[in-house]
Length: 103
Image 1 (tube, helix red, strand yellow):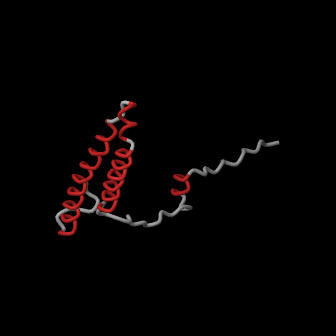
Image 2 (cartoon, helix red, strand yellow):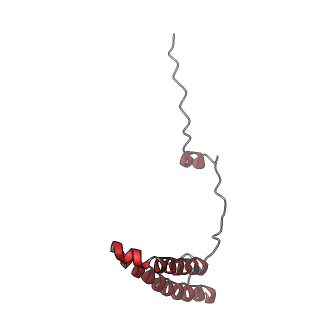
Image 3 (cartoon, helix red, strand yellow):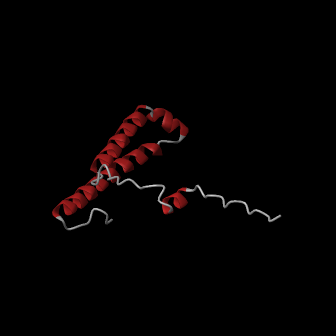
């Protein structure tokens, strides 16, 4: 009797499925190209964190963790720098001086 070869196992990983045409990538556009709303949200979060930590300042000082306040101040300040960068970048994209995909 002739030995039968087992059937080749079909790979099910996404890369193989894509190569066989079984998967199709959807064209999904980014929700926000400017990044400005995200940076503003971060700035607000750092400001809220500062106020909350300010309320517990005595306990932070007692535990030697008063430096946490300075972390929130740094995050808040860097957020403003990031906002200026995003606004400048977005203006350049709108004016056609820069590609949307270039960073």
